[in-house]
Image (tube, rainbow, N blue to C red; front, side, top):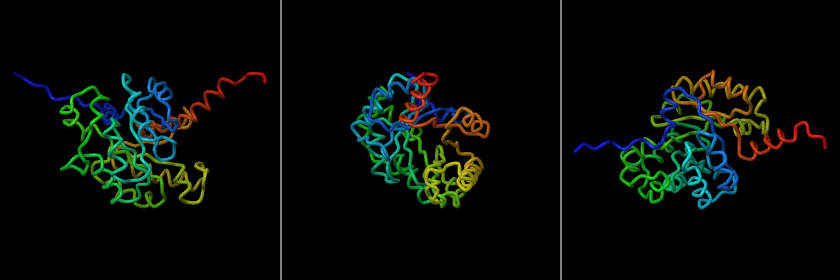
Length: 258
């Protein structure tokens, strides 16, 4: 009798290896309905536990709301701590977005958080993840290390100074550039288009592209997205749930006499 190996649950890594751009958004509103709507059109959603009013119970519901769609749920934690990454993975998230990665030690810590021994230090207890993906516990465990995405965020000027050492860390699946905190780190709060910030972003981008690790970032317009794709970006965040709602309302009111 022949047996087949479990199939990977996460389609994003294959798409990135093939150089295919993927599109996502960051969910900050604790809403099943909002996630369900976005999941119909997006390749991935990052549920935000860093800045939004979302607790683990809401996050679990939001992860589950992506079921039956091609959308891959990931989750952004508040700090680069293994204990913060543990529960979201066990609830079914297939990626963790680690904020404020500033050096090689930070990157290594993030990588170890998302993989089981001997490749990492993730503790066992994925009681609910197999239900989200409609697989057995054995099949979930068989591909868990390869399915899980370690997404690091480059968002501090110190990280740009150390970009080569950070990107040489084995096990990083995608590196994204965060313009908001990068601007804040040099006292340019709310000024992502300031020349100094843009220069830092270009240095970070060059370092990530040199490493061969998939690169991601924020694309606020279609023009920006197309330019980023041409430069090699494969993970493009189109905005937050709230900003996408704002843009949709603005389009709906365009041309209306008030």
